[in-house]
Amino acid sequence: MNQKMKRIRQIFVALVLIAAVEGFSSCEKYSFPQPAVDPNATWHLQADIQPIFNSNCITCHGGIQSPDLRSGKSYLALTKGGFVKSPGESSILYHQITTNTDHIPRTTSAEKLKILYWISQGALNN
Ligand code: HEC
Image 1: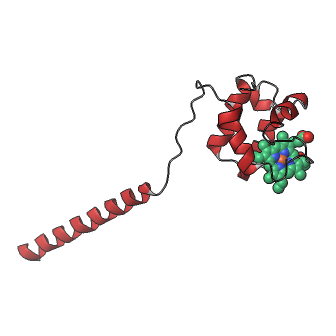
Image 2: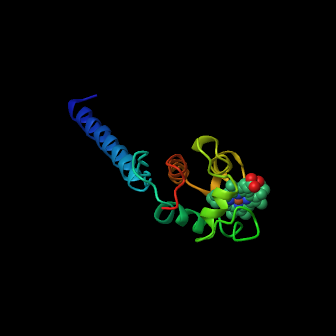
């Protein structure tokens, strides 16, 4: 192969590599990595947990199906029913959202962690 052909081939290979790298990095833009959930931050029922119940749970847990997870009802239902006893990992609430196949897909892993940390921090009515 003459020198010119070699050069052209090198440039072609370089362009393919650049295109591949660009392709990967542009995919990353659309993968929306979840922000880390900080276990040392204080997690609040009203601000952090209730919105998860509102979007993912109250269609079923809206009064008839226990626990009642509607705003204003969830705290009493969860504490009186013994769903949020420490340690968080073995509480009924965390157990349901991480092991019951009907419940697992209803929360993201970040939401599961927020619920876990809220329970571990004493499941306060905060
Ligand atoms: C499609 C309806 C449906 C949705 C949505 C739903 N659940 Fe449930 N859940 C049920 C049913 C039915 C039961 C009772 C049977 C069972 O344990 O699977 C139940 C049981 C539970 C229990 C255990 C109750 C007990 O007495 O032990 C908890 C805790 C719970 N759900 C939490 C949640 C949370 C938190 C969400 C939202 C992330 C949620 N559920 C979303 C239908 C639902």
